[in-house]
Image: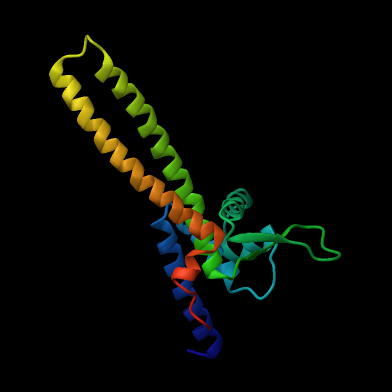
Length: 178
């Protein structure tokens, strides 16, 4: 195997690992492969260049790039004289993880807290109703306590997400030096 093949093989191994890892977080393999490919580029790429490199359709490529933009893993860059949009990977993995973590967890926390808060209100109405059977009232009161306990966890998780957004997490767990 010559040097060019070794370079390609080493990069492909990492790109495949990135794709599989991102799949764990609900991001498709193809989007993970796109990020990995962009990560190893030494220049920003157009959608057409990415499409050619990965063999994906232009529609699929556009959707994948949009997903990576929303996750803040790719940024659009401007280059004088270039009419097509150019994209490059965010290379700061600390920032990439922080952005990805906060986007995904903030959404999940919000959804769960909303459902729990609404359920607590419904259960409190059930408990206070004179028509509720004692067995149902007791079960509802237990559920209220469980949900209130869960809400304290989600409040803690919100603070953890806040620490990633603000960068304060790195005061507790410093970044490794290059």
